[in-house]
Length: 304
Ligand code: 13P
Ligand code: SF4
Image (tube, rainbow, N blue to C red; front, side):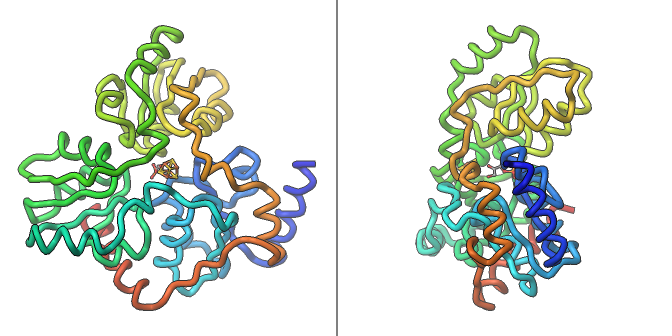
C-alpha cells in the first residue's frame, strides 16, 4: 500500500517536474520520496537552487512561506493545508510595533519559526543553528529576541556584551520536557550521551552533553564514537538516525516530543498536492515578500 502510493508520487513528480522538500521531523515514508530533507534553513536554501518550478513542502506553514519569500517565482505548495506551527503564530506584528514604541532603538531578532507577516517588522532572522553567531555579530547591543525564550536564553548565555530581552513564547513540544525525564532516561540508558535542541527549557539544556539544531544533533550523533544516545528533539530524529547508523542505539528523551503538526502530513496529502486535488498554494503579495526578504537577507549577511 505505502510502496504503491510512493511509486505513484515518484512518477507524478518526475512527469510534472516537481521538487518535494521534507523537514527532518517528517515520517520516514515521506522522507523516502523527498528530493531533499533537512532543517528549516536548509530547506529554503535547497528550494532556491532546485531547478524545478514547483515545490511541494512537507513540513509546516512558515517553512513554505520562507521558501516562497526566497523563491517568489516558484509555485510553492504546503502538502497539508492545516500544518501550522503554534510557536510561529504566537507573535502578531502589532506586538512588535508596540514594543518598539516603548523601547526605541532595539534590534528585533526573529527565529525563522515565525510568520512572513511578522518577519516584515523584524530586523533579522536566525535559525537554531545560526542564532548565537548572528546575535553576536549584530552591531547593536540592545536586542529583542522572539518568540522562543528557551532558544533566546541559550543565545544569551553564549554571547557577550548584549542586553537581550526575551519574548515569553516557545515551542510547546520541546518546552514540555522536564529535567526529571532527562534523569530517568539516563537511568534507563546508563552512559548514553544526551543531545538536545535549544528549544528545550534551560533546566533540560543544562543536563545535556550536546546542544544543537536538528541537523547539528544528527551530525554530532553520526560523527561521534559513542554508541548510545538519548535524543532530545522531535521523535523522528531518533528514527532517522537509527536507519542512518544501524550499529548505534538511539533512545527518545520523552514521548512528548512528537509534534502533531509535523506528523499531520500523509503520503496521500503529497499525492493530492501533485494531482491538484489537495495542498495549499502559498500566495503572498510583493510587499510582504520584499519586506520579509530583508530580514532573511540580513540573516545570510550576519551568518557568514
Ligand atoms: P530546526 O529544523 O531549524 O532545527 O527547527 C526545529 C523545529 O522545531 C522546526 O519546527
Ligand atoms: Fe513548531 Fe515545535 Fe512543531 Fe517545530 S516542533 S513545528 S517549533 S510546534
